[in-house]
Amino acid sequence: MKKIKSALVSVFHKEGLEPIIEKMIELDIKIYSTGGTQKFIEGLGGQVNPVEELTGYPSILGGRVKTLHPKVFGGILARREADHLGQLDQYDIPTIDLVVVDLYPFEATVASTTDEEAIIEKIDIGGIALIRGAAKNFNDVAIVPAQSSYGMLQDILDNQGGATTIEQRTQLAAEAFAVSSHYDSAIFNYFNKTQQLDHFRRSHTSGKVLRYGENPHQSASYYGDLNEMLEQLSGKELSFNNLVDIDAAVGLMKEFKDEKPAFAILKHTNPCGVAIRSTVLESWHAALAGDPVSAFGGILISNHTIDLATAEEIDKLFYEVLIAPGFDSDAQALLTKKSKRVLLKIKHWNIQAKSFKSLLNGTIVQDTDLSIETEHQMTVATKAIPSGAQMDDLLFASKCAKHLKSNTIVLARGNQLLGMGCGQTSRVDALKQAITKAKHFGFELEGSVMASDAFFPFPDCVEIADQAGIKAVIQPGGSIKDQLSIDYCDANGLAMVMTGVRHFKH
Image 1 (cartoon, rainbow, N blue to C red):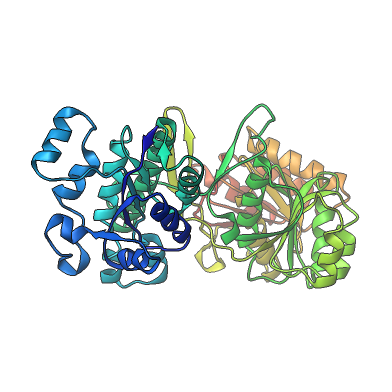
Image 2: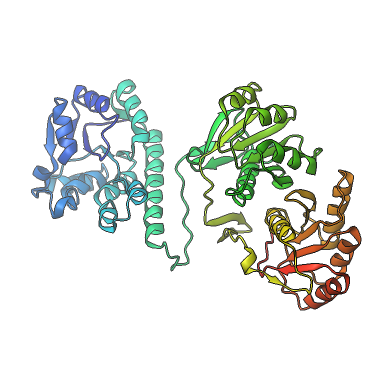
């Protein structure tokens, strides 16, 4: 155990500091401080040794330089050994056993303003150096690098008389370098916002341990601020699989966020029912009709507020999660009666511009697929031109296909998903699966449309589609054999539209 006899305290945020200072005063710990923190401590009746008196220099350059001095860092970095202690005596440098600092709120400033001068001034220099210096000398010095560690310090002061163990100092040092690395990542990403440097930096501070991962034998954690995007109104704690499915659901419904009432049902990240109708209730019934079997235990999402009539129908089905931008009070009261079912209110549809995952011996990063094709971007490749209603259905089907695992085919009519095939090793198999599902659930395919997430290398898919009654096709195009599919469509009266954008989803 090492007794804390002296401390440097210099923080931006003072909340929660008062009881710590009061206990330091009680334990007769010598306190060094500066600026606003010094005034705060003196206001509590504490005696402060001003840093400027220790260094012999005032705070200069508008506060940019206050603690950057050998008389501060010498007392922090010195090992409590004869050689180092002798040098401290030689230069009249006091030892500092505890450093309590935090950092200027760089991320909060970036989030609140575009004023570059204000942002740059929130890049902490002295604070980050104090944190790293004290953490480096953890064998002899305790570092409290953020408000999140105040509780641990309070416990040390209250229950250990201000003495720290090596285990505690090691833990605090680890937290210090976590704070330091996160801060540096935020600053790097600000300066590299145009992606000129090919470096990957990602940091989250709010980790949450999940019950388990994809399977019970796998441990898992979530890092991020889920509450910034979603408000959980009821239900059990979200699992790893819930979060993956919710992410997929939000990505899909973002495509329809400005449309009339839309509803989607997803299972294992794949949409198995999607529809747009005049009311939320109608869109729910139409989405459910797409695959009422797979809907059991699924993830449900709407782009409009859920009313009581819709809630009463949804409540008849067992589901895992229901997401919507709002719930009428009577609908929410009904849906929250079943305690295990998760109810989420989505606050916005913003999706991160970059996506990434770990694999092999590293991480792959890519631009998130945020492309939404419009009719004006598309090329009609056939003699037959899609009608207005067909074009509307083609756009709808293409948005659905974008969010299904490749290879995928979507069949739709009247802004309703009729059948889908996904995750197949051949596009023909995906089409056959989609046709089989549609017919199994009683849909007539005559006059429907087909969307593919990638091009047709052969005309086999359009032939099968034609035989099933499908009249219009949307696909990216780009195969050296595109003309074979176009020729078949021209010979048989089908319309084909090419988007020029592939939507593989592995």
